[in-house]
Image (cartoon, chains in turn purple, red):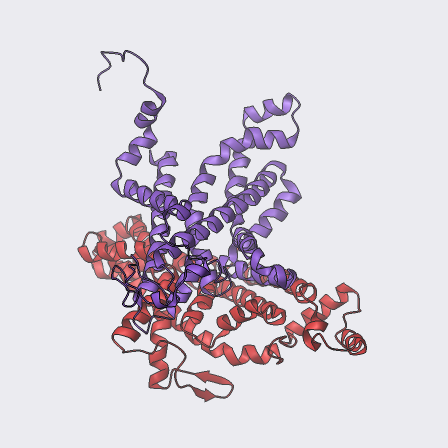
Length: 314
Length: 326
């Protein structure tokens, strides 16, 4: 663009954003745009599930056994009802079940990412800022945690929680237990990253200045250091959201996740697997497809974000 | 070199003790061992007797010491659910998991290195590009979906391979093997592919990028200048130097193999340790859970020790430490 004619009025906030480096790199990558749109669509559909879903899969009164095993897009042989993506053995609409299921999957995923983010960033800040023994201890624990596979840690946390929570509360507590189990198996990565960048930031002049005006350690960490180490955290959080959704699905698939009364995508796939041999492919295929698309689109977005925020690649 | 090995040994010991402490804490404080072993209806006297016999009245440090001593001898107590010794449950299921894990590691290693080298040498060929894009999709696929997909293709549609179990096994001493019967070998194919797939993509991508890096190094240019045939440079000089990071990652990935063995074994109803562990988690069978944890930690320590030893074998610089040099 030429600089000869200055714009009559400064461009609006939106226009400025549209011209920024990040927006440009976003626009020029069609794969990222597609992935983002897909992810947004899936998230929106999950959030608005009660508005969109044609049936309520949790209302036993609306279920009719003669609706069972309807094929996708074909009228049922007995009742003549059409289920877009078919129905399962109890006459539950697969489309509605997927909407509600991805709602639970995303809820558990997002909450556990938030949980591990808070723990990891907190411990990382403390480790980097305080240093000494505290740092050594925190990073040692993080090392041990990182060397154990996340799914194993999550299974252990889940088992321990089962042993400690009274049976009457267990079904209601499952969601929180899952969030804790997945969250506790993924915090170490944040702690490592944040500690690394905190070590760099700690020696900069603005931190000295903040300390000189008499601020205590916590305000310095939270108000001054934290905003400057947040970039990489955002990238890890995005990619971890996809991982957390898959981890939740895996746990539910193994039968140690969401109960059948509140199925997530993994629980739906677990059910669908039973029909693999009898030819009712739609009960298994559609939830699996949604899970893969969800994970893939979030992953692609995260990959792009990592490259876009990496100053070395600019 | 001796100091190097001793240091790895010490580190392994510390890790084992830390994990033993976690396992002990679970074993002692999650659920009540006495109630779980005797059932709800036992008399107070029975309970008191068992509490005394299990040594649960002793000070906690003493109990921990006893736990470690027992664990070192392979004694993890009795399963709450099955009422059998945990050690015999593990011994019974160990062969299934070991055969599955070792075969899939070999599969991932051999195929992964071959494909990685190919993708690096024929960098712009269409096969290399296809393999690379497929591996990207493969990374986003959850393991259990890969397993289900394979079952659908090879067991449901084509009916070539069985979809669950180990098939017929042959007993050799306490070891049961599926490697000597046709149905045992057939049963191994799908689980091995499922478990090896993720490892394969990781190893392949790593070999490719390392190989591309090494091929730009000076010693490769000098080898070319000396007129050594390209084939020989690729395999004798370049591949050998890409192996060190590959072996590190592959060794560390063993944890991943064990973790995904849990998933694979559940998908294929494979009678191994992973399935035992998932069942233990479902029914809060704490002795089995803590024993499995110790087992996994032991495998970890053992492999990282082996990785350290392989380093010494592959990298001449590590042989003869400064202290031993003349």
